[in-house]
Amino acid sequence: MRCTGFGDDRNSARVPGVSPGVTISEPEKPAEDPTPGAAPDATAADASENGAVATAEPPEATGGAEDSAYPEGSAGAEDDTGGARPGRLLRRLALLAAAALVLGCAPFVWQLAATGDQRHTAASVPDRPVAIVLGAGVRSDGLPTYLLAQRLDLAVELYEAGRVRAVLVTGDNGVEHYNETDTMRDYLVAAGVPADRVVGDHAGFSTWESCVRANEVFGVEEATVLTQEFHLPRAVRLCEAAGIDTVGVGAASMSERGVATVYGWAREVPAAVAALGTAVFRPDPTFLGDYETGVDDALALADEETP
Image (tube, rainbow, N blue to C red; front, top):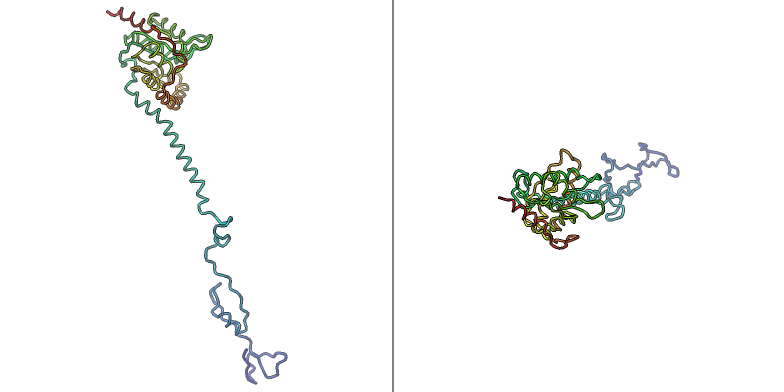
């Protein structure tokens, strides 16, 4: 506060309790900083000396708005990686699914590649002494299903062309009133194959069991296996694993049985995985039994007729 001399009434004001003639000038205001929010040039001590009230300046923010809300590491603090975790989890799941798909399809792809040279058409298949016809179901009226009839027709064609000399029909006769093998035999005989050249295996409950019984029970060492195209790679592979020198012919079924054929191809993917385990561990068939001479007898009769 500055006191001025008498007679100087410039910027003066009368203050109660002060002698007349003495004036007190208004306290000088500190210069305002033109920049909003900037700290004043005067220190707190200077402001007090000039008659202003010193106020505490808010601390300058150092870490941005997001850091001021929660201390680092607190429960409310934002996790820098939390937003990315669901994405990483989805990517890992996608990679696992892709790996499972590749591993699941690998046996099927290998099966296709490994049997490529053994799969033929009826016109190009090499000669073999025996044709093995795998069962594929009997209708309620006792006739073969369409897919089974296709396989039997191939057997007739190969027999008539002299590419096989005997036919082993193998199927399921495990329940009463369902005799797959006899149905197959009757169909072949009606089509012109001599009855003494057709041999039945009533315990062919699966592709593997049909193949292993053909080798161990009926003594088949070389054969042409007959089935559908989608089933042929696995049938050839399993008969090879059972000890039979195998080639095969597959019937095309897409035009007449499209849904069944697509299902058949899809089914072969997991079936190839099971077939790989079967070929490695070679489980015993449900019924093995004693050696049967049916195929030997049929081939002996065929040899007698050969000039």
